[in-house]
Length: 129
Image (cartoon, rainbow, N blue to C red; front, side, top):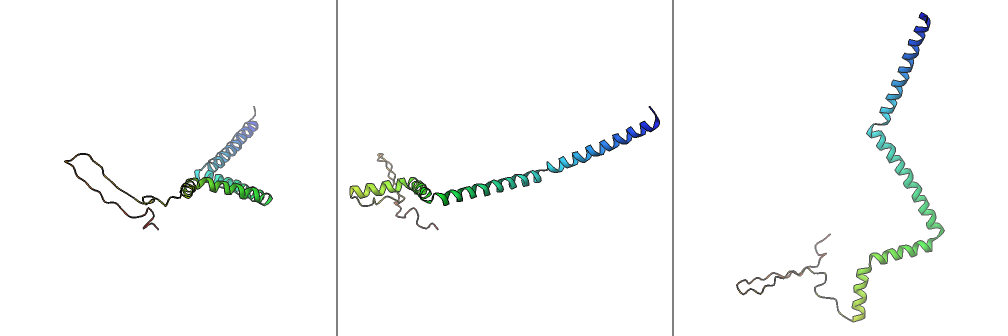
């Protein structure tokens, strides 16, 4: 092997080393947590926009079906209050005095222990803003 070939080989090794270091630097930059989070957030925003566009298209194509589905969902969420209202309506009962009220009672059969607790006449939502 001649001296010229040896020098050429050293130059090629140095060039390869510089390319490798450059590639490793780019990989390290790309794998920084802030960059990974930014790429993930960009993907989420893009996918969210696609889903919103698809939902809007579906609503435009079938507004009645979407209305029925939303109404059924609302009825599902309100099933307990509707059930109580229908029971009162059918039975002809007035609203229970204790319903919606916080009531505290202490009961005991021990004659040595006498306790009474106040009955709170405040609605559950009273004072809540």
